[in-house]
Length: 369
Image 1 (cartoon, rainbow, N blue to C red):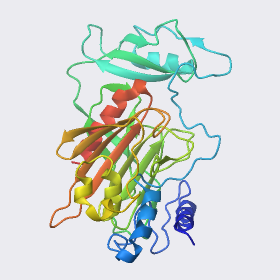
Image 2: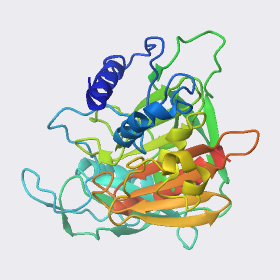
Image 3: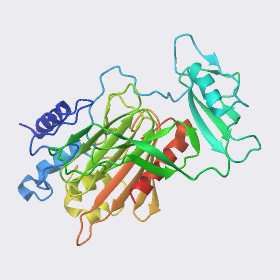
Image 4: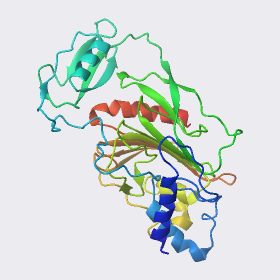
């Protein structure tokens, strides 16, 4: 059996064990996402190094995810007002001067998504809409994101507490009563918007809590060596714990928020960082010398080093999902006493909601110092 056939069988086994709403354990020796039992592949003999290289090249940088059925519309927030709908475009109501909740209700009833930006640079009472985009009377298709600027009180609390949704989790080992418990809530910095509302999401043992829009679907995977993936996707999308496998985006592509962490699997860590971290080849010479081990960065990707092994990655629409993708990667190099680790979150939302992604990335960094 070829390596490709083995990987297909491996993925089929995982997908069969990860039906929505279930929390199954995989057969002994089979673990989710990209994790191998214990660390045997990482320390495998030179005789199988080439096979490992092919396998990691196929599995790649990102975490495994199930593929959505053909024809599923994977984005509830289209990127443009030109998306065709039955009946053509509608005129946007004038909601300036209304309370934020009232304005949101009016626009939702007209079929528009709403993003609410808060500002203290205003003289209006708190909670009043002072500007909107598209402007009143403009023609826009249902599903278009309308941005409302709402006056905020400068003395508002600086933090907010979110409930945590426990995501259906594919586990590499049989769940035990002694396993850690996921947090029931997360306290985060108060975001600069009120819509969309946010919620916390976590795998079943709380290894990787993340924040994402409230009411979305989620799915997670926990490996035997501590590696974890959590994916949060819009309503109507088949839950997935990743935006793709390697350099290939899961089809059809979708918006969402995807978190991942790798630790003991050093080949996985190298795959996570090799396109991002300049020192990756020097830090992982064994893997760097294997042809085809590292993938190819998406066209148009921009990487911004932020210091202290923290990197921001920005990908254009169409690279990882239908909308622009923004990621934060924290890399901790190997030491004499510890393995290298990599933790990443990727937020894919319409460009009009870039500040939502910025808030989620900031909170991810705070939750994973």
